[in-house]
Image (cartoon, rainbow, N blue to C red):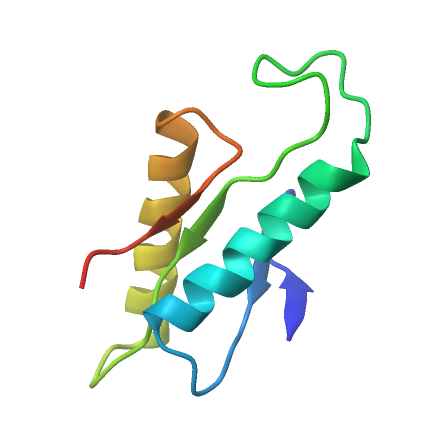
Length: 91
């Protein structure tokens, strides 16, 4: 399921998917957006639209709030490392 989560953020829920599978889906999403080559003249990263993706996996007794916080932390890590990339929580 892919849904808007905030102004410019989306959440992609992948039941029964581990971190490697989630990373592959996120990497493909990022590559697909990049491949469309939508012009973005004001971008400091690229002349086209890019996406930054933070990946978190819910394991054990993690709450939804913890999962979202982990994904958000990875999103901001992706942005800090240069944008237009995928970051996955360690684990």
